[in-house]
Image 1: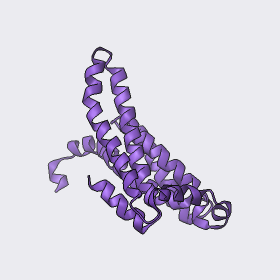
Image 2: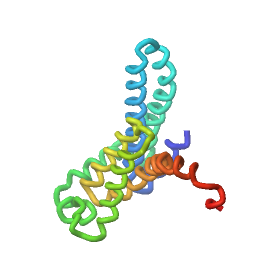
Image 3: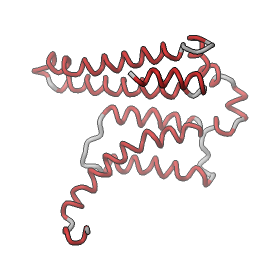
Length: 185
């Protein structure tokens, strides 16, 4: 369980530790959604499917619970969990600090983010591999955070990269399989 140790260290070094908790919670929610959909789809073996998925869900829930407790291993104690919420609720902070404002798509430096959003949507629509519900949940949540504050654009990019890689490969693999071996060298 290295994740709680990393979160304890992160909480003692930087206030952005909440991102780690959010990512763990999103992963747990995504896997829970996947499990619920699998149970629903397997009408004849619902109990068996649930028992197959339950262990992983319980493990992720335990990692989240221990990570939340690990954040409390700081001079501020468990009160540190309120810090991100208190910071976000400061009106002047969000109004005056550039990175806390929504992306302005009229500014050229935000265009790569717009391109990434469009690439994600297009690739998920075109990919022969059906996107997992957990992927869609995580991408949607990270996209909402990025639209709320520019500082979260990098977080969306980090979350989108593995999904883009999997779906880009699903699109390119059949094309590359048809490509003559002599041209690939």
